[in-house]
Amino acid sequence: MKFQTKNGIPTGSRISPIISGVFANTWKKKLYENCKEKNISTPLDFWRYADDSIFYWNWDIEEFRRFEKEANKIFPGVNITSQIADPKGVHGNFSLNHLDMTVSNNNGEIKTIFYEKPESSDIIVQSTSAISQDKKADMIMSTVMRVFDRCSYMEDALPHLKNHQR
Image (cartoon, rainbow, N blue to C red):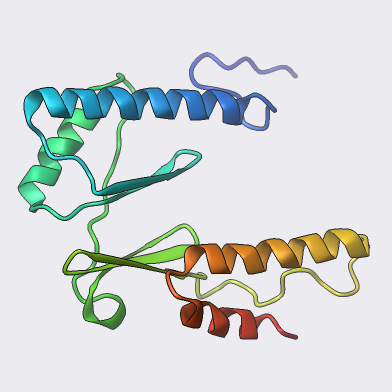
């Protein structure tokens, strides 16, 4: 059986991440240019992983909706959806879980901490796995680096690493 992609890019192809990155950067550049021309506010910061994005926003919701509407005009068939941070989130600040981090905004101060879904396992790789010791070490190091990368402050990273000490 053979499948042909008519729209988008094929999942799993080695070139797909490159095409995705070029497309996303083109989309962002065009969006910011359009917003500047129309005097629409843009995010304080913007992170993207594959097709997931997070915008750090510090203006009112009406201005965000203007930005969102403009973003959805850039390319037909490509639409962003939004999830607004919970005002009663982490430590009473506006917060949002996104992929493997929680982002909180306390009066404009952005803080990130590592986030694991409640159903996730503390086990990175089974000790009895047939994976080579080098690969196991790489997986553990990758997890440690990801935890430190996602946390604004080292003291926020340490509890997550202690969960994986077994």
